[in-house]
Amino acid sequence: IAGITQAPTSQILAAGRRMTLRCTQDMRHNAMYWYRQDLGLGLRLIHYSNTAGTTGKGEVPDGYSVSRANTDDFPLTLASAVPSQTSVYFCASSEASGASNEQFFGPGTRLTVL
Amino acid sequence: GQNIDQPTEMTATEGAIVQINCTYQTSGFNGLFWYQQHAGEAPTFLSYNVLDGLEEKGRFSSFLSRSKGYSYLLLKELQMKDSASYLCAVRDSNYQLIWGAGTKLIIKP
Image 1 (cartoon, each protein chain N blue to C red):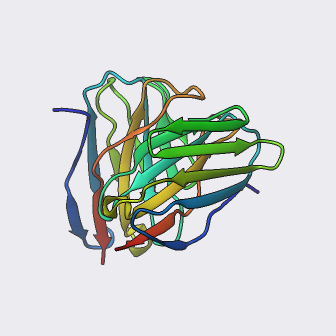
Image 2: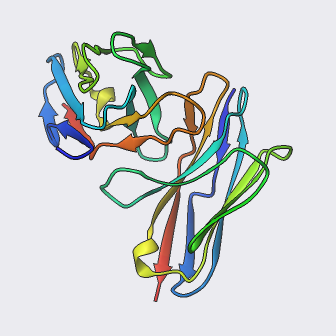
Image 3: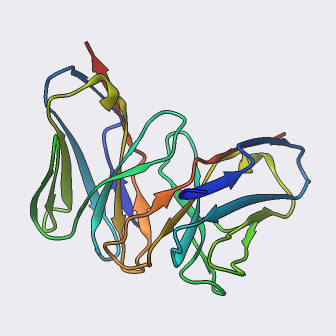
């Protein structure tokens, strides 16, 4: 593994189903993030984690949950998917949550909820 | 509220220079980032400004004026591979990134 990986690459999901998007990084970064990207809108932060064992809510957290049991993994769960959650989801990480720390992004998961 | 404004789309010619502007209104300021995103791919880091002035990195330069809430990304000697979206993001008082919608840059031969 080099950098950040996400799985699956894409998924079509029936409304009401539960789905977990996986994210793993091998850079030993402390901070991790989940964003969604929709056409015409900027990246919007869903949840974040500044360090293993802690999580926080971003701009659009409703309908999503996360956990950070260890440094490397940061899964995002949709408990009961709805069509408005159709989007491209990016996981990102940074060495720390400080000002100058750039974020590195995974390749994204394209999710369609029908 | 917090707001990042960028032009939606710009067109430029191969070999030319283009300037992509970004204006922001955020709760606090802890730096401004520019990212490049090719279609269907992840964003990749280009530059970071926290002090006023120009930061140069090869063909790309980024400028910041904190008093004006303004930044621009300057791309010189444009190449076809520079066709991409360019995302401006500001780190706010909570150290979270607030993102603009991005500027799609189209390069014509």
